[in-house]
Length: 384
Image (cartoon, rainbow, N blue to C red; front, side, top):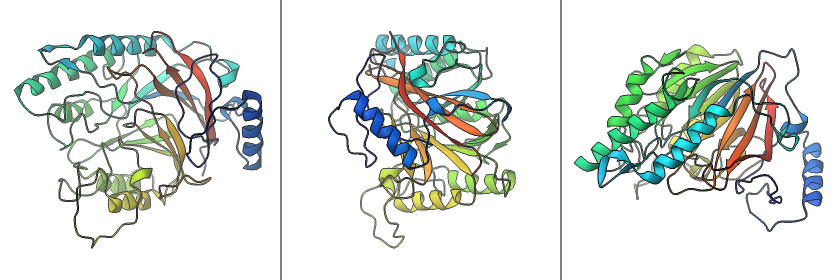
């Protein structure tokens, strides 16, 4: 799969931004020379772009899906029963775009074709903004924000403004401690969420199928146990235990393509694990939790990881260390989708067949008043 690192969301007509495999951004260069260099490098590595590597007819029934993150629904602190005006405008315009995008053409610069009928939407967390704050006003804001999300996105498809089902997980702005209104609502929604094949004992983490893909949602971070401690900023709510038991039972040695989603970006926390090290300050994702997550994935055909949190698109291979490599799990860190202070935002569009996974980016520079496909695209096999 062709992979690149972070770059600003682009609209039609933007000049190319150099994307360096070592994750160091450099100044823009001539577009023709840049594209030629990228093509040569990709050929040398045996990789192909989404534009040149479309799913072949007859290789499996295609399945299309959207991936968003960091919608940050925000209520008005002075009137907590209603949404903040800017948040309302951003989220409304984005949802309207999601509803209208299926069936529209994709330009040749982004791979060509049309957006297929979408089978579902994956939300990688920070659905709301106030879930990490305490007090009566913020509790009311949380209820207002979550209700607005449910009214817009729905659950089963057609019960909100979107015609397809929605699969969200929680981020640090939803609930850093793993409790509260957002958690309660996810647990309740999991009881009637379409296609769910397994739910964790605590009702929070779950798995389902997107066409040929076996999907697993795991919350803020992946870790064992059900508490925050001297090492952890966030409660993993036993997500590692669910991942391990679920994959062993439902995937096993089948080599079925697996997609795992969580909220925090993982590479920067991939440091050496020393279980005997004395506690210092709590980490957002502990090194030992990251190592255990990486080891839990190793027996399986994991074709993609999706996350949000950074409010900037970053795609790379994750090999269990902070350093990007040419091998490793394909890690897709999405831009924020409708943050109330964001204007440069983005989302992913994925297509899976029996043979390949193709991921493209759709983005805006003006908070979804206008938007376009970027020239970034990634494609790789589903059989590993």
